[in-house]
Amino acid sequence: MRKKKAIVSACLLGETVRYDGTTKINNEVIEALKEYEIIPFCPEDPVMGTPRERISVIKIDGHYKVMTDNSKIEVTTALKLQTQKMMDAHPDADIVVLKSKSPSCGLGTTPILTPSRDVLKIGNGVAAELFSQKFPGKVYDENSFFKGVDSKSSLE
Image (cartoon, rainbow, N blue to C red; front, side, top):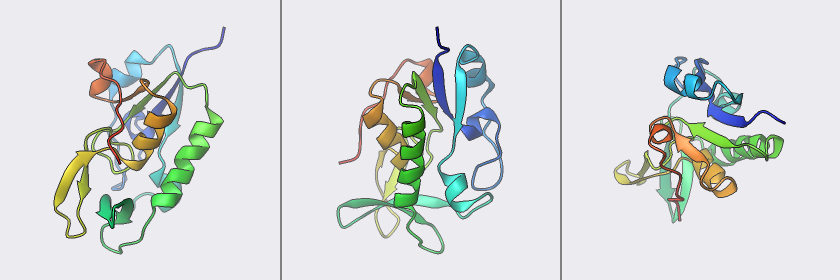
């Protein structure tokens, strides 16, 4: 019998992959998944390195784009490709636990901004959206994971 697989945001596992070179280690998540094969995931680190410029999700002309905050470089496609690679490598994942409020991984907690940087709504990061479509009912963030609240698509 194979061990269950969990794709988990690498920052929750203690990896220093956040934009500022820090971590958001969550020992409760790690402990809860001790019976799983844990697959670390961070789409931002391979695309932009660490440390890196902050990014935000901006709705421009009806489309959601992930842009670097200062240099205004769009990284949406690169982040989607990293997420797709993970899903292709682990199509049999049993659960996905992502970092809340992240422009990539936030699940119903990511600020979606207007071009003038006003909050339009709160929704999913680009990776969270793709995972939610591929693994319906199996995607959580570090908060909803313990409440048993599953994912819902929030982007149009």
